[in-house]
Amino acid sequence: MSERVLDLNGYTDVPAGKIAFVVTFLEMREAPEKPLAPARDDLRLERWQRPDVDEYRALFREIGADWIWFGRLALAEETLEKMLAEQTRENFRAVRNGKPVGMLELDYADPAEPVVSYFGLTPEAIGGGVGRWLMAQAVAMAWGRPETKRLWLHTCTGDSPQALGFYQSCGFRPYKRAVEIADDPRLLGIYPRDKAPHVPVIE
Image (cartoon, rainbow, N blue to C red; front, side, top):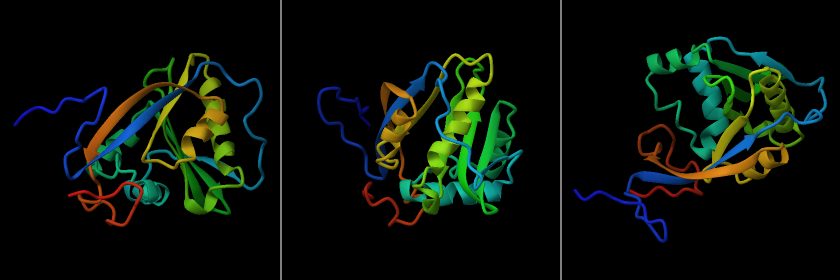
């Protein structure tokens, strides 16, 4: 089988059964001068110590289904459980009226350059400033550590079209692009075929 090479000045075919995204990496190189969002009485940030795998997957799926988030759903239960228990990872839930409405994961594997590994809201929580409040918590915690020199994250063309502008409005600046190719999670049975119609299924 011939090896596929990315054409940097044209089109490169993506095999059937695969999906391809353009990934944008963004960074914040200094702490904001003031909080990104005011305090709120209707929201609570809950540290999620060693999340139960089934509960984690349920919230992950609720938040990411429209964008076919698959990274954690494709992992074996034991692998995911071990990953979530890593000491460098801190998982949180945004809670409103006793119900989780958001997910935040910070990874301090490199203490100088922590990453917002996962960040998202349930569909009913989108709008009204919940996302900005949650990002304000992430930014404050990361920059509250004296080791932090840079905070970064990434988004992609498979995600909400609002995501890139939102991150930039929070003070993150794009610095790199990449192309991600993966098996289509709908063809793997992780999601129904009708999810994420903005990324058509091609068999």
